[in-house]
View: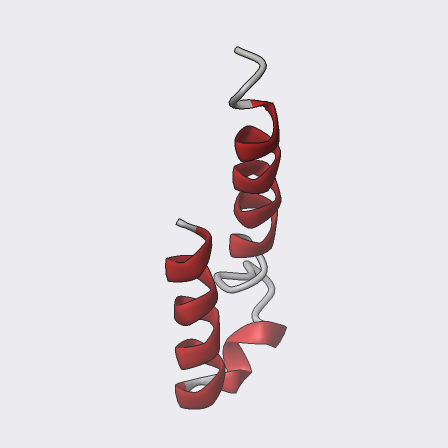
Length: 47
């Protein structure tokens, strides 16, 4: 999921960089999901 999200951000940045300044933030919303995925991966062994 992290790799796919980073690929999505990279391709969207190249093709439509104006989406970063969009008030609803379609690209900005991906960053918290990456962080949550990394947190889930970190605690996966504990569960």
